[in-house]
Every structure is written in C-alpha cells, then in structure tokens.
Image (cartoon, rainbow, N blue to C red; front, side, top):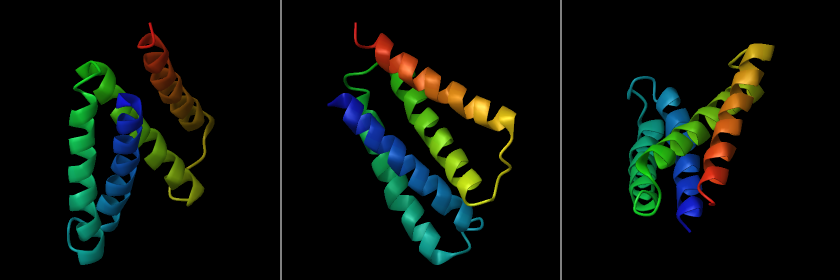
Length: 106
C-alpha cells in the first residue's frame, strides 16, 4: 500500500510542478490555486509512505516520478527538446525508480 500511496504522491507532484510553471511566479490565480492543494496532498502522501518505506527510497522515487513526468510532458507539449541525452537521462531515472522498488521487495 505504501508504494501506491507514494506513486499517487508522485503524480500529484507532476500536477503541482506543471501548475507552478503556469502560475508565472504566483501571478496567475488559477494555476496558483492548483499548486497549493496538490503540493500539500503530495507532501502528505509522501509522509504517509515514509511510515513504511525508508526515507531515502521514498524521497528518491517521489522526486523521480515528478522529474520523469514533468520532463515527459514538456517534451510532448513541445516545450523541451527531444534529444538523445534527454531521453537516456529520463530512462536512467526510470531505471533508478524500478531498481529502488525491486530492492525493497526483499
């Protein structure tokens, strides 16, 4: 259950990070109204997941999900270049997340 909670926290991190970008430094109301509750929920779920998972593992997976999600969305939406090094780097983060998950199964 901790992994599902952590995954949800990571998805919320993607949402608040994208809304943070759209808020233009907290000058736009609607994105700002998305940032605060999703960030709060994301941190709360991360804390819940840390009850069962090591802090380093949970934090690395949480930030990894956020980083991969935001980078992927920006590539898809055309805001970031699709270069080989960017794609390899995203794949490396995914490999790290999977590795941490697999290492916690023992």
